[in-house]
Image (cartoon, rainbow, N blue to C red; front, side, top):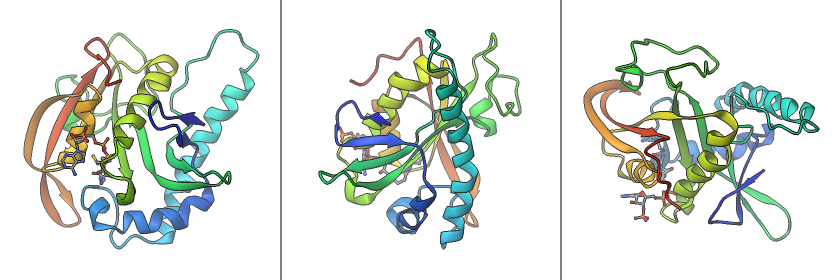
Length: 223
Ligand SMILES: CC(C)(COP(=O)(O)OP(=O)(O)OC[C@H]1O[C@@H](n2cnc3c(N)ncnc32)[C@H](O)[C@@H]1OP(=O)(O)O)[C@@H](O)C(=O)NCCC(=O)NCCS
């Protein structure tokens, strides 16, 4: 569990299979799904279970690696964050599902533009040329505009992605007009690169995208 730097009642944790019924209303809300390119609509419980069954083994594998190396005095480098679900902690010890923050290797052509790559391998190479990472995220509308996502992304970057994954470069994408997401990325040190019109088909409609980039060397943080 990773506690946010500025919101101490909000944490990032691994995904759980029983998150499924809490994901459905959020990804059915037009304040959320409208801005997500890869979310089916209408969104069903089966969709949520499919996604959870895909991501849980990844976080389980990282947690197992971390457990196996816990007596090792040197901290190991891992390929993914073990945590991605944003939850609010309640006084009675329970928690409430608030959203998701996924850090993954980038794959869109505009994210890889300029590198000579058309795709990246499933795992980071950590070679001479930095791997290019990207972000996908959403938050419950009840909690929008309280600085939670920018805190979550800053926490993930500074407490995990930089020190434990060796992340040096990100290229992030939002659908055109998504001021909230552009605001989060800028607040976390991303710099606007360009807008591409007619870049992607989203639920049958062509949409433009904004592309922003982040480099470790230029990162001043947003603390
Ligand atoms: C985008 C999203 C994750 C932002 O989360 P959030 O916790 O509300 O964002 P923050 O409060 O950290 O906002 C950071 C900055 O972004 C900007 N911002 C956030 N929401 C905004 C909005 N609705 N309109 C304009 N600017 C906005 C502001 O500059 C804000 O800083 P400020 O409050 O100090 O002025 C949330 O709106 C969301 O889940 N949207 C739907 C899904 C989505 O768009 N996901 C991203 C896909 S790329």
